[in-house]
Image (tube, rainbow, N blue to C red):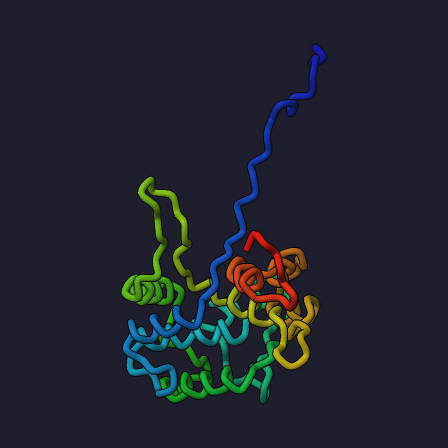
Length: 226
């Protein structure tokens, strides 16, 4: 048997991990999406397009995955909690999802749209969610923005960015205490993340926050350059 002079894997480069998305939905984005689907976000949805927008808002308020929301059953709702069995989660680990008052209000609106079903969003499926949300997004002009060379300079909004929107809000400082609204372990329990490194990025300041800090006047700031 002939021996190899060098390991067969020498010189083989592993594929790079894809860059993490930074896109979240701003307040302005939400307003544009609501306008695009002709819904105020407060009344009972009139059609499936508005109901998809409701599921997006619910994801922004809870950090739940799209599939978890579409399969919410009345039996899983317990006051301000949703009990997700392991079979209903991507990670196959059961968890409880906390509901804010605004998330509960959205659930009530969804119930009113489909009052006779055990599965609250039974009229929707993944295909409808993808197609209708993309339709809303494009109408709101929130798709990807490219420069003259075709390079993406601003990522288009996706439904899945709702989870990042919740995580960014939960990791941001509470106006009263200055501490994050949720610490990283509590945030992981809420969203179902198993890898805490994926959540650490939400505790770092965004580019917009850095600009705000740089522009904030400091006491006795006498830097002659500025």
